[in-house]
Image (cartoon, rainbow, N blue to C red; front, side):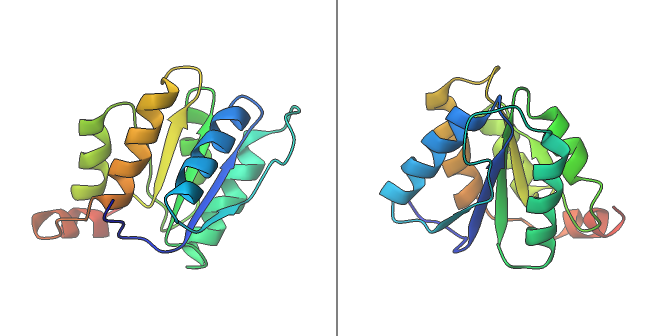
Length: 145
């Protein structure tokens, strides 16, 4: 896998905890360095807290990109997108994932553990990590966000 990003961080809420752990193990097995921002046990937590913490890390460039997992992906994306400079995209298939990087230069992928199969989620993360931003006509639009 030709990865574009060296520093990846991940976080979830309780609904996404199991998938977060699966994604983390998958990436570690592919020798990708990943920083887990929690939670560290499967108990009820508030997703905005984890989305904000991860988004601030990406904004500060301590990580190149982030992975957020909750039940639908939507709550995490909405929360992360409140941070200036963050472009979190809910991704649900290969095309939406590829376009989120190529056209929107998304720096966080948000996944829905209750809506997306584990095997599909792993493919989406890999696609996100290896897809580059096309720039060009898309750059002027990104600057307007």
